[in-house]
Length: 67
Image 1: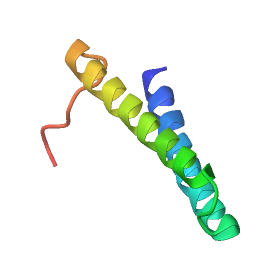
Image 2: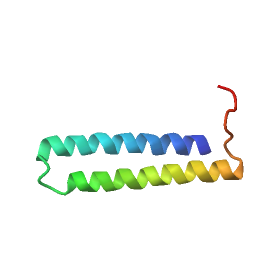
Image 3: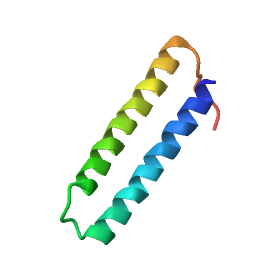
């Protein structure tokens, strides 16, 4: 369940990235939609980082010690 949440958050960040690109090309940066997309992307990235760090701390995820 935890890995699914991480994948969903990563996909949401990518979708927000491309929606910001679309708004930048379509509007030419004249509206606030690019800024809103950036704010959403930053918030999703912070949530993704928090989920990963908390799950590492609680033992839900483990690091791979061998490359």
